[in-house]
Image 1 (tube, helix red, strand yellow):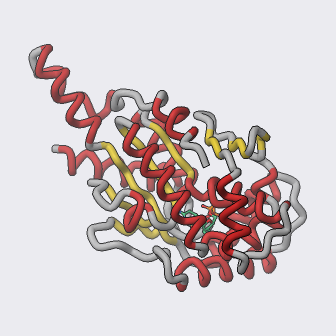
Image 2 (cartoon, protein in one colour):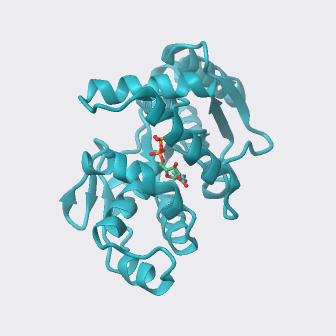
Image 3 (cartoon, rainbow, N blue to C red):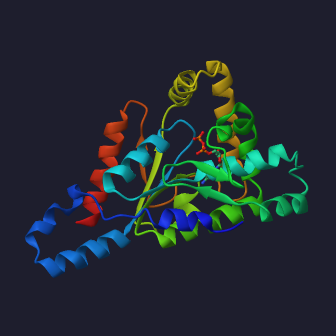
Length: 260
Ligand code: CDP
């Protein structure tokens, strides 16, 4: 798989947002530049959590406010899953999986569109079939190695990035100075997911969704390779009764404090 993601995302990194640079006004011009450069290089933000914890919406908004890159790593696992599903690949056939991965080009464009072998699969990776197959695919060593390598290349090429997933704090960016784990009560997570699906016109029931995310949570947290877990040094936020804005503000406050 080529490192196309790096190229696309590298161009997106921008300077940090106005809010965090208010103190700059009191610095002489040349010091302002130094400060901006050093603070940008520290803006690696990891956000992990289970399905429906709000992390995609929150991570996207945090990146917007800070004017830095946002990467949804789940979309990458979903795209690989789509490819393996279409090829009817047996997940136990590791050389078959590796051969398919080797011939795969994956890109995530700045707007979040996912391009798999030149095809825009942004919608196709959000189907119930992919939901059901993604966690078993994400358990595979070859898949994780490829994904983590690409994600680390993107992080390395970015001046600032918010990356969200399941293993960002533990494996992809263990040195990130800002690590968050979002969680919420299971019924609330299922309800949020149901509302998203209904908005898209998908006729799924609450029970279907509850079962699907419960099963994904189980596989994601029990797997041998970089399971979903709270990493030491991570700020845990229970989003059960918080709005998106409240979670975003909480994260920005933590970052602000850490950068003082
Ligand atoms: O958005 P949602 O919470 O439904 O899931 P996602 O972020 O799109 O991730 C889909 C699946 O990819 C997860 O259930 C994990 O199995 C896998 N994943 C992973 O293993 N590691 C990541 N860093 C991100 C996702």
